[in-house]
Length: 114
Image (cartoon, rainbow, N blue to C red; front, side, top):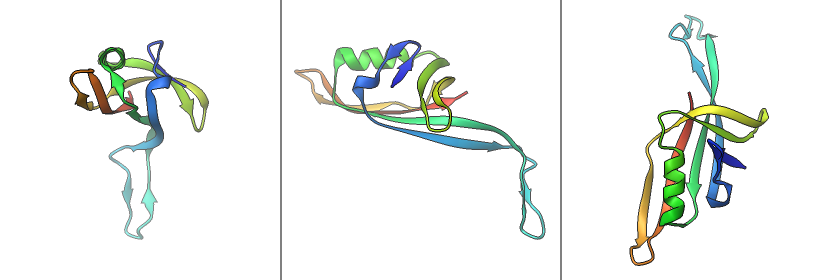
């Protein structure tokens, strides 16, 4: 299950990978003994999405849902279960497979927690 600002996009998703990413402060370093001195300031989520072939109306629906600078995403988190996080979108790419049928393939993008 995944929705963006209440728009359910689950049925279009081909693959969904959720990563937990540690963010460290600039003071995280290794000492002279090689031991890590770590100052973790946050753990953020990144969702890598790839979509099945899409009609023009479907790809527009998805791209419009992620068009704001920041938006809320509801998804299944491997650590917390169902979660709702404020996120933003990385670069988006897709290929026009059939211009007569307006069929798009390979839509991919990442959603990154703010």
